[in-house]
Image (tube, rainbow, N blue to C red; front, side):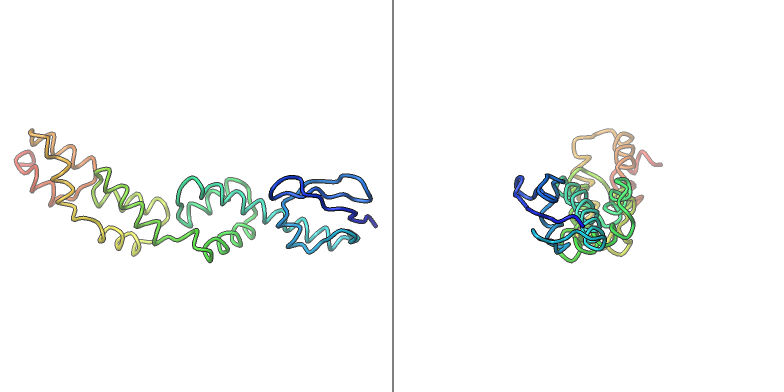
Length: 192
């Protein structure tokens, strides 16, 4: 039975494992800790299975945290990202649960932040709702996020303030996903 003779720090977050005095592999230190192996242990099948399972989990967490470092994601977007990275479904579910408990994945926060971003870019409520739906946000959370925004009419007025032509106003507002009531109020002549 091979024996783990040494664990040496390779660089931050990684340890180099030696089997029977020879370099074997470099792995994340948290996977080694969760697998419960230490220098002097014999690496039987059970210990190797535990280590393998923790390495797979560590990879899933690494994929997820890298994605979340770039921008906030909805739970559905995170699931899709993990699926594209070919993380096993059971591991992906565990990773999503872990990150959810830690507060790193929160659909309510995501919906509010994304809705505010889109509103600031001049999008109407219908377009914002469609984008949130496309990100996998539940309809109730999307509605609540949109309700917390500045009223659609006020955002539309700001958007078309410099546009004099009612036809151009109507096209702009329609393209940006503003509702019929807002279109009629701000570009009514063009719609008749």
